[in-house]
Length: 213
Ligand code: CDP
Image (cartoon, rainbow, N blue to C red; front, side, top):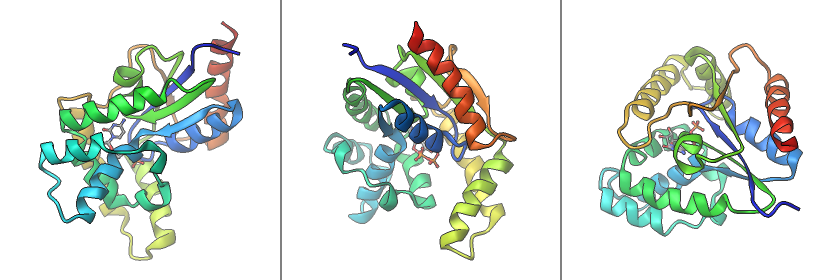
């Protein structure tokens, strides 16, 4: 039994496939999984539900500090517009400080954790044993998101989804606090032309090698 948690940090832009990969890896290795995107989404949704502004940093930071990671429900938080709202509160340093504190505490869980987000390899867990950066072209990512949305909403529009994703990438990559970028020691996996299984196998090869060390 390890006495220190083994950490797999997964970063990447929206709809890159990092969430599915993270869940599959956590299941395979018997590790805990935290989708940190849900923490930003939960803050945004709590503000929206109470009719409060998304632009008040003090208020958003209070909500972030009170957040219970155990109560995060993907089915409630997965809506596309909550993702966009999340990227608005995610630029706020005080919100990030509160959420990163909770995320680092989660990362102590034994025997290990798969944590996915935008700043895991760079800020939340810079000492992670394995760091992956998952990308795909904006067009491929928009198509994936569009297909997910169309199942629930027949009026979903591919061009609107593509424009939204590009806008969100822009905001995530160019913000001052913890912008989305690969850690210098991250392994890049481009899923534009790769299925879920191939991405899993590539990640598994890297992780198995790190576990042997
Ligand atoms: O699932 P999707 O990739 O669309 O989004 P998400 O991972 O749930 O993240 C929603 C938003 O939260 C992102 O666009 C980021 O602005 C923010 N986020 C962040 O800043 N840092 C993280 N570690 C995770 C998410």
